[in-house]
Image (tube, one colour):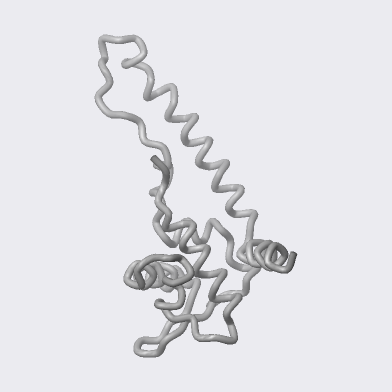
Length: 143
């Protein structure tokens, strides 16, 4: 089991909008790159728009970034597409057996570790910008 792919697709959408500035970045165009349904792309674009990361106009094909590349962090995308709720990246199973020493104590033991792990991951995401991603893509593409 993994976390939602919305995060990766959100990054994909934003990077492609940037790299296709001269073209029309419609939901159909984005869907063909992601290899998914355009309805999925429109839903994610709505989330990115609500988070203030892109601008779209009703009835007009295309989207553009509403911030500079260096002002959009991967954490912004992560939050925009609702990958997980705060401090809920990892789930702890409910109702362990209270008669068992592990069952009695497992939640209190691992929940702080899970919270620390999520906060560490989010710290990394805050340190990487969309500019970093786009530069990496361009470097790989040009080699």
